[in-house]
Image 1 (tube, helix red, strand yellow):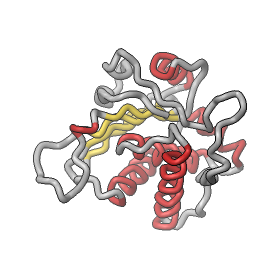
Image 2 (cartoon, rainbow, N blue to C red):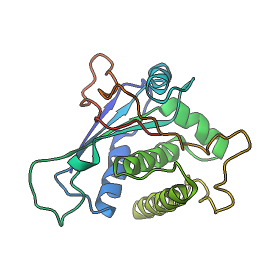
Image 3 (cartoon, rainbow, N blue to C red):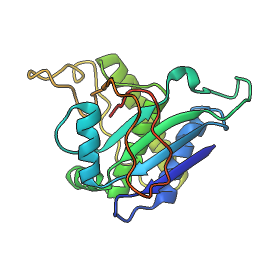
Image 4 (cartoon, rainbow, N blue to C red):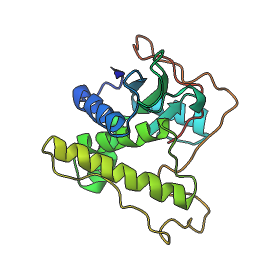
Length: 209
């Protein structure tokens, strides 16, 4: 499994732990070991730019995922071994993660680990645009995050509550729950990289958060 990470955020982040979380999720999901993905950590200004460009939203967000087209993804060991397949890119904003962690009452690293799980699941085709999808994804997200935390002896914290059928109903203003937007922009070229980044170009699929 090849995972590249580039920290362009200016924040101190334990990149090895982020890589370990991503690798754990891919292993647990049975993704072919030849698969590749990249993780890019950015500052709040650049995440604001990406969020506006790809999601049409104002302000920064915590995580964006840029999956490759599903037809290019090698989904597991049962498939023939061939050329490595790029799953796509995950973009994380440590500053937003730290603010959300303070509100939730856990550590910033726990929040980044949660967002890494969330981003990897998007790359594997999971989404939460409707209540059933949301419940499926968040149940799996909680299981994977808890499994990794237990495997390294960390307290099991950070996973948001799994929505029930009633919880998954949309609010009166019509907005979706946290991280439920998905955009399909016309420009599929992926986010431009900050100068000096070592992360590969984003996938050709839609941005998700």
